Length: 172
Image 1 (cartoon, rainbow, N blue to C red):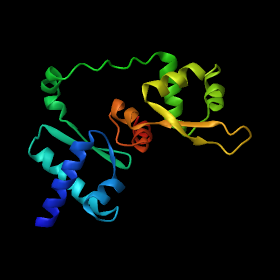
Image 2 (image 1 turned 180 degrees about the vertical axis):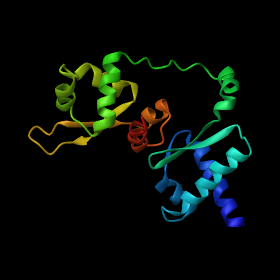
Image 3 (image 1 turned 90 degrees about the vertical axis):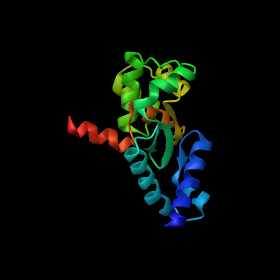
């Protein structure tokens, strides 16, 4: 029991120091275990923070975890920290982002085929804002770039994974 508590403390310290999302594999390495070991510890940490109504919470993003402010106490942290400008998403950006989110990984030509207009500006703006990133290249002539969503996208829309987006779509 003492070893598990110590491992939780190590994970907490690593997550705090990282400041952003940390892949499960890196967390496993931090505690000297295989990739499956941290999942139980992380689940316990999520429960503990919730039970204690802690000022922080642990969120899952794809195969990564991140410490963040409990929404209940966000207003207090906001008083101290400088305001981050909220990304404004225009209708063309939202349309393009929706296509990328549901079809990822996807090329600009597929986006353009669906929208019926050039996707260059919209995709570039979404990459610039950190909501979309290059995810590789399609094995086809010209090797077009494949685009997909990022962890910032998941945080922005309050999702744990891209699969959760598809689940929510099915619930509507």
